[in-house]
Image (cartoon, rainbow, N blue to C red):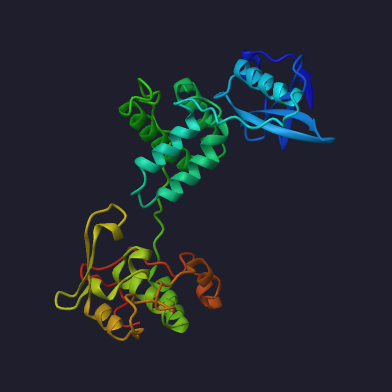
Length: 338
């Protein structure tokens, strides 16, 4: 807790605490304080006594509620208290371009159909809003964004920094199109470093170890892992595979756009061996899923499955994930007859 005469310019310069939250009381305005949390968010609060009890009323967030406005709201609260009425919270005051509100609107309108919506939201709420959430979007300049992204990259998370760059660039571009801001502060702002892409693939020996481990696990998880190895498909493409997606006549799996990462229809060829594996899978009555234990939902718990692998398979650095090494017939090299 501190007491000082707050100024409009000084409010933005007060540093947030390392942990928890701190109340900075405005001298000359009894009970009015600026509450700052360790994440950087700021809000105006009013402390008063009502019927012998100490109480606190949140007046609104800063900077949507500026210092002068906060004092006006404080005066109204004091008038109610002097008249024998308990102060009540005023309707929330948010600027039209409050950055936190813009982020929520962007996620709703631009990212609703994005398969990675939840991950984008998590990154913004964890990495971006604690730093930029206290600003109006119109107040955010190139330097603010650059400092944020550099800080993420400097802690060794270069790939995450590049993804934050991409998400923010799209958000600002969308905001320009909506007339919220006049220009994108990230225009021509280069991404930091280079994204580290996975280059690790399983060796033939590791593939055999993984195959045998999946064989021991059995249906449904083990069978799904084996089909992943035979097709080199993405995990969820096989884990959530439906019987209606399998075309036995053409020996292929046909996925609609909503089931693929890029949103485009995709065909996965099936070798004779992969087809025979599918034919041997037990079919749960009335279930649309090929690999399921409940009949109503596809298999899950991939990370937990890794902990159950036999000891000889845990030595395999790639675990039981599908290798990207496959022949033109959709069959892993040297794995036709494990």
